Amino acid sequence: MELRTAFALIEATFEEGRRRNARPLSAMVLDPGGHQIAGAREDGAGFARLALAQGKAWGSLGLGFGSRVLSEKAPQAPEFFAAAASLFEGRLLPAPGGLLLLSDGKLVGALGVSGDTGDTDEACAIFAASQLSLEYDR
Picture 1: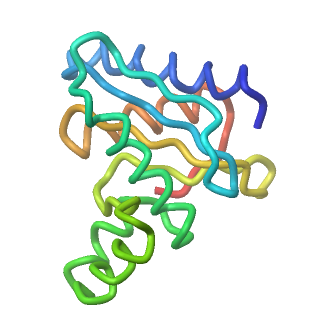
Picture 2 (picture 1 turned 90 degrees about the vertical axis):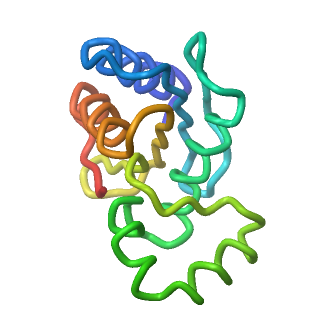
């Protein structure tokens, strides 16, 4: 994924957040290997929100599921998720707001959003992916 695409995803995420009157958001875009391409936080977003957004995106990439699916699986296997969080050095947040991003069926990265409720974070991420014609797995 190109840097300008990552920046466009972040801007579209924030645009949808403003439209929804969401709390200030943070967004992180990672490449398929989990490396940061771009990240930003809106004015007023808590200082930890970027790390939380990264945890949603990184956990999705590491386990191969969007963070909503991870949030649904976590209560069924708490020991696994506790161990995974330890192995991933805390970079696993099984809460809605992290999407695997695909183009023509090929994984191109992940987008993590944090700042409001998980449902709102996820809706803003989905809006951004759709605006850029990217497929996603939530």
